[in-house]
Image (cartoon, rainbow, N blue to C red; front, top):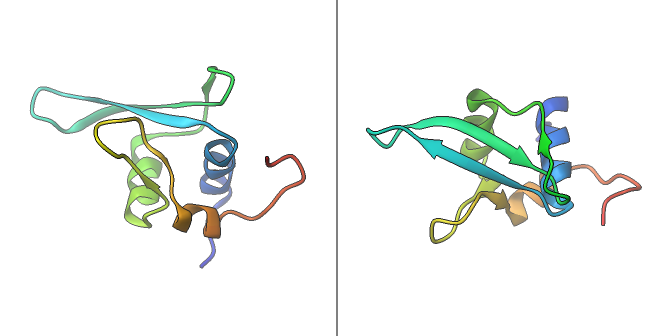
Length: 85
């Protein structure tokens, strides 16, 4: 399965140790998503539509209320790059 360039960029950040933090509104719907790289800096390029797309493809998941991380499926989807660790 082929993924877009924006999805690829976010999955690379997550593969290197990043996370996605989600803020929810009062009715428990996702209101804002923030991608944070491994150094703790906020990374641009993630919006709610892209977040939902990654979640629908099961490339990211959250366990026990923790921030979203990359899954094994996400690691299969991401193409390798030289700087991945």
